[in-house]
Amino acid sequence: KPTSKPLSEVLAAFAALPANATSEQLQSFVNSTFLLEGQELVPAELTDFVANPQFLTNISDKFLLGWASEVHGYWPNLTRKVDETFLCEGCVTSLLSLNRSFVVPGGRFREIYYWDSFFVIEGLLLSELYETSKNMILNFLDFVDKYGFVPNGARIYYLNRSQPPFLVQMVKSYFLRTHDTDLLTRALPTLDAEYAFWQRNTTVDVFDPSTGHSYRLNRYNVDNASPRPESYVEDYATATNGTNLNATAQAELYADLATGAETGWDYSSRWISEEVVASAGQDDQRLLRGLRTRQIVPVDLNSILYANEVAMAEFHAVEGSGGDLGRSQWYKRQAKERVEAMGEVLWDEKAGGFFDWDMGKGGRRTAFTVSNYFPFWADAIPEKIASNPEKLTNTFADIDRLLQEYPGLIPTTVVNTGLQWDLPNGWPPLQYILVKALTHTGRLLEGLAPAQSNSTTFVTLAQHLLSTAHEVAQRFVSSAFCAWVQTGGENLVFSS
Image (cartoon, rainbow, N blue to C red):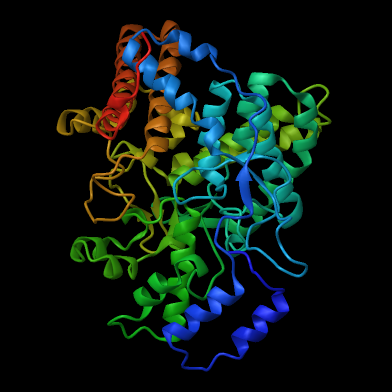
């Protein structure tokens, strides 16, 4: 809610409340000092809207075409701009400054969020909305210039944390579509700054007792010692209800709760002590008190950073980008060191896959989660794995099994805690990453096959992975389409 009075008056009115203020007194304070929420965000004209983008012509099924056309038409309804002209002098809002139009997730999410926007931009580019995509990217670049990083979302209460660092990938997707070197020139120094933020704040040295060596990787890490403002009641209850946590332990829990939000997976068994997951059932508060988020070195974060390092090496070598060839070589070395560290720390030879590393227990957490496949999306595959079709077969065996076991999407994990990022939920961004992972790996094997003595084995596995990618994609499309039909879509006129 924006304030209806100057900030100084709002703070004075709050200070005048009695220490034991009643609910009625607090409600009266809010009603007298704040306006209705959302007023600073208004619809923006989508000037680059394309009624019939190319991708629609590739859909042969008339029902899916009608649905896709309808979904494509949602963009104008989700485009916003900031208008603070209604604010009195001295009045304030929690919304961060945004100088250009943007697309919001929708529903109760009025403002933009970081990692959601990568997938939004993938859709915008498919819909040929290049100017809108550029505006989204420029808004995020402005955030980095102002704050040193991209906040979780466009509110002041998100300024103590970020989210999965997809800004480089947004720029890459946009640049591959448009070859806009002006945007790349504008972005490069800012992307360098964001990369430095992640290296400065989230880098850890991971000691692997099995090898006796340490390896440098990254984790999520938020410096926070109090409940999150946007979830204050929930966090406070988690830390205090039926617990005997002292102040230090509460501060640690608040840091892990905020860090869990930074991961984008808030919340999941991935971040919780394995002992607590095994014993807490679906007791949300007990589960969340077992969070160890800052102790986990995640597969997905390090895969994203690897993909960013590869892309940044390429960006700095683009003619006309204002890049630095020396910097390009530096990013190549960073990527090489990271993929080697991932191969040693996150790859489990016995289990045949990539897994999060738990610094608390000094080992990998070898449970299934879709995040295990991010290295294959990012092409962060060490040579010892990429050249071995048997290892790749074992790695993707869980996907084959889950496709047999469940009729719908690939679940996020196979642990049913009742938390959002666990069984039975299958989140669209993860289905996207999995399809890309399967496709990239299938193409990789196709490329390697001609030089192999057992080329038939490579080709057979490649075909299987590409077929599996199609199945995962088809299931997501079918699931989303059927849900749309069952919630009102059948009343709309389908394309003939």
